[in-house]
Image (cartoon, rainbow, N blue to C red; front, side, top):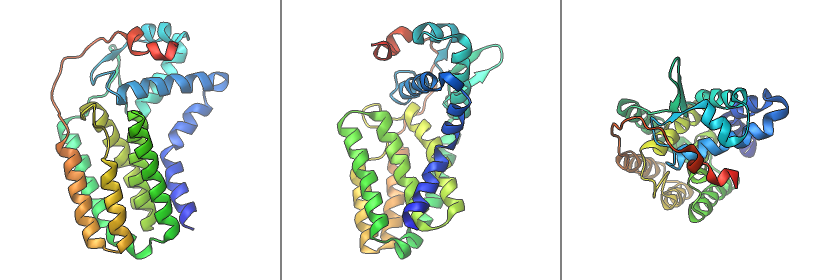
Length: 251
Protein backbone atom coordinates (compact mmCIF):
# COMPACT_ATOMS: atom_id res chain seq x y z
CA UNK A 1 0.00 0.00 0.00
CA UNK A 2 2.87 2.38 0.77
CA UNK A 3 4.32 2.42 -2.75
CA UNK A 4 0.90 2.95 -4.34
CA UNK A 5 0.09 5.81 -1.97
CA UNK A 6 3.28 7.72 -2.79
CA UNK A 7 2.95 7.04 -6.51
CA UNK A 8 -0.64 8.32 -6.44
CA UNK A 9 0.31 11.63 -4.83
CA UNK A 10 3.34 12.19 -7.05
CA UNK A 11 1.23 11.44 -10.13
CA UNK A 12 -1.21 14.10 -8.96
CA UNK A 13 1.63 16.59 -8.92
CA UNK A 14 2.31 15.85 -12.59
CA UNK A 15 -1.34 15.65 -13.71
CA UNK A 16 -1.45 19.12 -15.23
CA UNK A 17 1.76 18.41 -17.13
CA UNK A 18 0.36 15.22 -18.61
CA UNK A 19 -2.91 16.87 -19.61
CA UNK A 20 -1.14 19.83 -21.18
CA UNK A 21 1.10 17.58 -23.24
CA UNK A 22 -1.82 15.45 -24.42
CA UNK A 23 -3.68 18.35 -26.00
CA UNK A 24 -0.67 19.45 -28.04
CA UNK A 25 -1.28 16.80 -30.69
CA UNK A 26 1.57 15.94 -33.06
CA UNK A 27 3.73 18.74 -31.68
CA UNK A 28 3.55 17.49 -28.08
CA UNK A 29 7.15 16.30 -27.94
CA UNK A 30 8.57 19.55 -29.29
CA UNK A 31 6.31 21.63 -27.06
CA UNK A 32 7.41 19.55 -24.07
CA UNK A 33 11.08 20.29 -24.82
CA UNK A 34 10.35 24.00 -25.14
CA UNK A 35 8.34 23.96 -21.91
CA UNK A 36 11.19 22.24 -20.08
CA UNK A 37 13.75 24.67 -21.54
CA UNK A 38 11.81 27.76 -20.41
CA UNK A 39 10.89 26.39 -16.98
CA UNK A 40 14.52 25.37 -16.36
CA UNK A 41 15.69 28.86 -17.39
CA UNK A 42 13.32 30.36 -14.81
CA UNK A 43 14.34 27.99 -12.02
CA UNK A 44 18.05 28.38 -12.78
CA UNK A 45 17.79 32.19 -12.71
CA UNK A 46 18.70 32.65 -16.37
CA UNK A 47 15.30 34.31 -16.70
CA UNK A 48 14.73 36.74 -13.84
CA UNK A 49 11.38 37.48 -12.14
CA UNK A 50 9.53 40.10 -14.13
CA UNK A 51 11.47 39.37 -17.34
CA UNK A 52 9.31 39.85 -20.45
CA UNK A 53 8.90 36.91 -22.82
CA UNK A 54 7.95 38.08 -26.31
CA UNK A 55 6.12 35.52 -28.43
CA UNK A 56 7.88 36.50 -31.65
CA UNK A 57 11.34 36.29 -30.07
CA UNK A 58 10.62 32.91 -28.53
CA UNK A 59 9.21 31.61 -31.81
CA UNK A 60 12.44 32.63 -33.56
CA UNK A 61 14.64 31.07 -30.85
CA UNK A 62 12.86 27.72 -30.87
CA UNK A 63 11.99 27.61 -34.57
CA UNK A 64 8.25 27.15 -34.09
CA UNK A 65 5.16 29.19 -34.86
CA UNK A 66 3.81 31.85 -32.52
CA UNK A 67 0.76 29.64 -32.11
CA UNK A 68 2.99 26.86 -30.77
CA UNK A 69 4.77 29.27 -28.42
CA UNK A 70 1.41 30.56 -27.23
CA UNK A 71 0.40 27.01 -26.20
CA UNK A 72 3.61 26.60 -24.23
CA UNK A 73 3.13 29.99 -22.54
CA UNK A 74 -0.42 29.06 -21.60
CA UNK A 75 0.85 25.89 -19.96
CA UNK A 76 3.55 27.83 -18.09
CA UNK A 77 0.86 30.25 -16.92
CA UNK A 78 -1.26 27.33 -15.65
CA UNK A 79 1.76 26.22 -13.62
CA UNK A 80 2.13 29.83 -12.40
CA UNK A 81 5.69 30.09 -13.69
CA UNK A 82 4.74 33.03 -15.90
CA UNK A 83 2.01 35.67 -15.89
CA UNK A 84 -0.03 36.53 -18.98
CA UNK A 85 -1.27 40.11 -18.99
CA UNK A 86 -3.70 41.35 -21.68
CA UNK A 87 -2.01 43.97 -23.84
CA UNK A 88 1.40 43.31 -22.31
CA UNK A 89 2.08 39.64 -23.00
CA UNK A 90 4.03 37.17 -20.90
CA UNK A 91 6.51 37.77 -18.10
CA UNK A 92 8.19 35.59 -15.51
CA UNK A 93 5.99 35.44 -12.40
CA UNK A 94 7.12 37.48 -9.42
CA UNK A 95 5.61 36.03 -6.22
CA UNK A 96 5.07 38.71 -3.61
CA UNK A 97 6.81 38.79 -0.23
CA UNK A 98 3.44 38.28 1.42
CA UNK A 99 2.75 35.18 -0.69
CA UNK A 100 6.16 33.74 0.16
CA UNK A 101 5.51 34.18 3.88
CA UNK A 102 2.05 32.64 3.60
CA UNK A 103 3.34 29.60 1.68
CA UNK A 104 6.02 28.84 4.24
CA UNK A 105 3.65 29.48 7.16
CA UNK A 106 1.28 26.94 5.65
CA UNK A 107 4.07 24.44 5.08
CA UNK A 108 5.20 24.70 8.71
CA UNK A 109 1.66 24.14 9.99
CA UNK A 110 1.01 21.12 7.77
CA UNK A 111 4.37 19.39 7.40
CA UNK A 112 5.44 19.67 11.03
CA UNK A 113 2.06 18.35 12.09
CA UNK A 114 2.48 15.29 9.87
CA UNK A 115 5.72 14.09 11.46
CA UNK A 116 4.16 12.37 14.49
CA UNK A 117 1.56 10.48 12.42
CA UNK A 118 4.30 9.55 9.96
CA UNK A 119 6.56 7.83 12.49
CA UNK A 120 3.61 5.70 13.62
CA UNK A 121 3.09 4.20 10.15
CA UNK A 122 6.46 4.50 8.41
CA UNK A 123 7.81 1.08 7.42
CA UNK A 124 10.98 -0.18 5.75
CA UNK A 125 9.49 0.19 2.27
CA UNK A 126 8.50 3.81 2.84
CA UNK A 127 11.87 4.64 4.37
CA UNK A 128 13.59 3.11 1.35
CA UNK A 129 11.53 5.29 -1.00
CA UNK A 130 12.43 8.43 0.95
CA UNK A 131 16.13 7.54 0.91
CA UNK A 132 15.97 7.00 -2.85
CA UNK A 133 14.43 10.45 -3.37
CA UNK A 134 17.09 12.05 -1.15
CA UNK A 135 19.79 10.25 -3.15
CA UNK A 136 18.35 11.55 -6.45
CA UNK A 137 18.40 15.07 -5.04
CA UNK A 138 22.04 14.66 -4.00
CA UNK A 139 22.97 13.44 -7.49
CA UNK A 140 21.20 16.41 -9.10
CA UNK A 141 23.02 18.86 -6.82
CA UNK A 142 26.41 17.26 -7.49
CA UNK A 143 25.72 17.45 -11.23
CA UNK A 144 24.78 21.13 -10.97
CA UNK A 145 21.24 20.39 -12.16
CA UNK A 146 19.48 23.04 -10.08
CA UNK A 147 16.06 22.63 -11.68
CA UNK A 148 16.12 18.86 -11.09
CA UNK A 149 17.31 19.35 -7.50
CA UNK A 150 14.36 21.63 -6.70
CA UNK A 151 11.95 19.12 -8.24
CA UNK A 152 13.50 16.25 -6.24
CA UNK A 153 13.20 18.27 -3.04
CA UNK A 154 9.52 18.94 -3.72
CA UNK A 155 8.96 15.23 -4.40
CA UNK A 156 10.69 14.32 -1.13
CA UNK A 157 8.42 16.58 0.92
CA UNK A 158 5.35 15.40 -0.99
CA UNK A 159 6.29 11.77 -0.32
CA UNK A 160 6.63 12.48 3.42
CA UNK A 161 3.05 13.73 3.46
CA UNK A 162 1.77 10.85 1.35
CA UNK A 163 3.36 8.25 3.63
CA UNK A 164 1.72 9.85 6.69
CA UNK A 165 -1.59 8.56 5.30
CA UNK A 166 -3.68 11.72 5.03
CA UNK A 167 -4.45 12.01 1.32
CA UNK A 168 -6.11 15.43 1.60
CA UNK A 169 -3.13 16.99 3.37
CA UNK A 170 -0.73 15.19 1.04
CA UNK A 171 -2.38 16.80 -1.99
CA UNK A 172 -2.18 20.19 -0.24
CA UNK A 173 1.54 19.68 0.40
CA UNK A 174 2.06 18.95 -3.31
CA UNK A 175 0.44 22.31 -4.13
CA UNK A 176 2.48 24.15 -1.48
CA UNK A 177 5.71 22.57 -2.73
CA UNK A 178 4.90 23.69 -6.26
CA UNK A 179 4.44 27.28 -5.08
CA UNK A 180 7.55 27.27 -2.90
CA UNK A 181 9.60 25.81 -5.77
CA UNK A 182 8.79 28.90 -7.82
CA UNK A 183 9.51 31.17 -4.85
CA UNK A 184 12.89 29.48 -4.43
CA UNK A 185 13.52 29.71 -8.15
CA UNK A 186 13.03 33.46 -8.35
CA UNK A 187 14.22 34.60 -4.91
CA UNK A 188 16.68 31.92 -3.81
CA UNK A 189 20.44 31.99 -3.96
CA UNK A 190 21.36 30.76 -7.44
CA UNK A 191 24.28 28.80 -5.96
CA UNK A 192 22.15 27.05 -3.34
CA UNK A 193 18.63 26.35 -4.59
CA UNK A 194 16.15 24.04 -2.90
CA UNK A 195 16.66 22.15 0.33
CA UNK A 196 19.98 21.10 1.79
CA UNK A 197 19.86 17.36 1.14
CA UNK A 198 21.93 16.72 4.29
CA UNK A 199 18.91 18.12 6.17
CA UNK A 200 16.77 15.49 4.51
CA UNK A 201 19.20 12.78 5.61
CA UNK A 202 19.11 14.04 9.20
CA UNK A 203 15.33 14.11 9.11
CA UNK A 204 15.26 10.53 7.85
CA UNK A 205 17.49 9.48 10.74
CA UNK A 206 15.01 10.96 13.24
CA UNK A 207 12.09 9.27 11.49
CA UNK A 208 13.93 5.96 11.46
CA UNK A 209 14.41 6.32 15.24
CA UNK A 210 10.67 6.88 15.62
CA UNK A 211 11.11 10.30 17.24
CA UNK A 212 8.17 12.24 15.85
CA UNK A 213 8.57 15.20 18.19
CA UNK A 214 12.22 15.72 17.23
CA UNK A 215 11.34 15.26 13.55
CA UNK A 216 8.64 17.97 13.80
CA UNK A 217 11.07 20.38 15.46
CA UNK A 218 13.72 19.63 12.85
CA UNK A 219 11.21 20.17 10.02
CA UNK A 220 10.32 23.58 11.49
CA UNK A 221 13.99 24.61 11.57
CA UNK A 222 14.50 23.23 8.08
CA UNK A 223 11.66 25.33 6.61
CA UNK A 224 12.75 28.38 8.65
CA UNK A 225 16.23 28.17 7.13
CA UNK A 226 14.88 27.88 3.59
CA UNK A 227 12.64 30.92 4.06
CA UNK A 228 15.47 32.90 5.69
CA UNK A 229 17.70 32.22 2.66
CA UNK A 230 15.33 34.05 0.30
CA UNK A 231 16.20 37.51 -0.98
CA UNK A 232 12.95 39.14 -1.95
CA UNK A 233 13.30 42.56 -3.52
CA UNK A 234 11.80 44.65 -6.25
CA UNK A 235 13.60 44.92 -9.57
CA UNK A 236 12.60 46.59 -12.83
CA UNK A 237 11.18 44.42 -15.57
CA UNK A 238 13.82 43.34 -18.03
CA UNK A 239 13.86 42.19 -21.64
CA UNK A 240 16.36 39.30 -21.69
CA UNK A 241 18.46 38.26 -24.68
CA UNK A 242 16.54 35.06 -25.46
CA UNK A 243 19.06 33.96 -28.07
CA UNK A 244 21.70 33.93 -25.34
CA UNK A 245 19.48 32.39 -22.65
CA UNK A 246 18.53 29.44 -24.88
CA UNK A 247 21.83 29.01 -26.73
CA UNK A 248 22.22 25.56 -25.17
CA UNK A 249 18.81 24.46 -26.48
CA UNK A 250 19.79 25.31 -30.06
CA UNK A 251 23.05 23.36 -29.71
